[in-house]
Image (cartoon, rainbow, N blue to C red; front, top):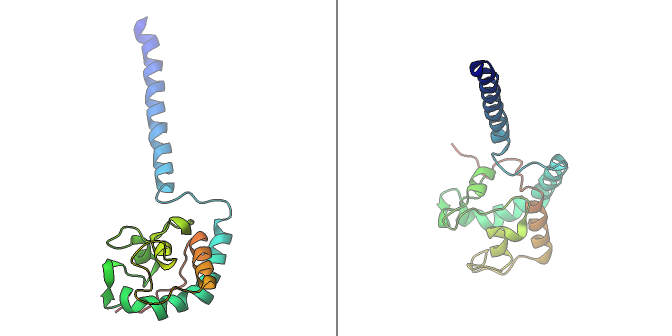
Amino acid sequence: MMRSTLLPRIAFALAAVALTFCLRDDLGAQSEGPPLDKDHAEKMARGLEIFKKHIRPVLVQQCLKCHGGETTEGELDLTDRDRLLKGGNGGPAFVTGDARKSLVFKMVNHDKKPFMPYQQPKLSEETLRQFAAWIDNGAPFDAPLIKRD
């Protein structure tokens, strides 16, 4: 009698464990970064437009001489999005979606030393607004800033 009631319980427990692993695998695949909100595509499109018009020129003119190509001060390479998100010796450079928590933004906004661009005047308020908007919209790149062999 005990055997007949125990088998369905064991089967149910095994099914629950299997379902848990299936759900965990699905959730694990999604947890490879911040959860995507419902307007993610719109934010990335806005961020990409900001990058093309405002951020790319600043990065190329002001930042790459020290943070890209042959020179990468503080191990921070800004030449493409993967390297940018990896950060450098100071840790992750960006918190995508939150400029105010991003190390690079704090440095270009002169909230944290060393101020960037290094030994140069602070970027204009408009440029800083564009940087914040770009980061808040996911910090997308349209293409690497330099070509690599």
